[in-house]
Image 1: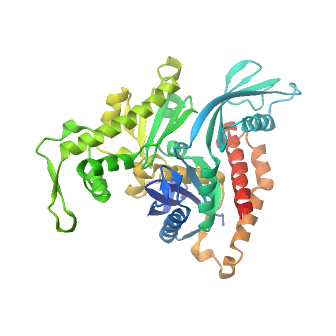
Image 2: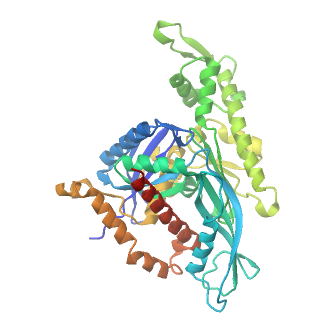
Image 3: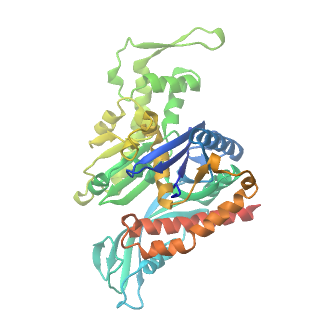
Length: 460
């Protein structure tokens, strides 16, 4: 019997932590087996600021996902976000010793390694190296250089940089929760995988993921990632504004935002009022929905303006960089009423709400198809790409196995890094998903995850 490839994604957000277990069905669609959700404690604007609380929240989400799916989780692919993330464009080249030999994976890896040696600011590390177009002996716009001849191999890169300590803190939380880290992915890239079509990426599209603590941006053109940015504002600042502006507690402010909030004040009439129960026997408080929408509108305009500034920095007005597919909104903030119309009004670009249902099996729960779960779905897709067995059936776990739990994971890693890895490299010209970009990205993350594991093991 063929082994099931069970994948697990863990989205550590500012407002919620989601653990999602899934697998590919016979039609190539993603079948979600179980979801666990917990309130995120100890995370602010995408960055861990309380290790103990974050571990408890992760364990709660993992436990719920295991109970719902019937699978014991061994390892997870985790999303990285936070205000410490920044990106740079960089061009580099190598001169090949023998131009008469065809360009292979080793040449590209050499180029990648050269980019990894770039000097960063103190405390920063390169976490993502994404090749864009290649040039061979001056001939530009080559997407797949493997198999070609040439002496000088050059490429432009999109390099994502983050605070090393923040990433290691996430690694520490995962390990302390009793599970292993099998991969790291920039959250806007995971969301993009879940909600964008290949046609949109080719035409040019800006993905805006409005989370609780941050708003993430990823711009694609010609099927290649061109720009990423993290804006340190999200849905939580809107809730804070409502709390202060209406003099109510945070729980009530969040409920008001979700149930009655609108990003477009003109939609509400002056006489539309909602009554909020008073605290401890105090008189109920009456809130005007028009005022509520004005508060929300002011903050959403600020967030969208900052994101649009990043889109302009990319140069979307250049005819060659035009984003024909416009903007796709996802994340919890995308559920705010009339936000689509407001974004269209501010940017003048076509906008749609991004749902992760394109890749989900037809019988999936409606809740999972919400923009709220876009990142988690994308992380499960990344975990499937890794081809690791991230979870095993509860009924398949033998009692003695608990004692050798970590040992089994180590053995699993050794097997995965053995001959199979070499076989994958031999097939990289034939397999579609093993394109140069995907393979390099995977190789780089394997090495980066190993580096984090070594750091955590030696930290004790």
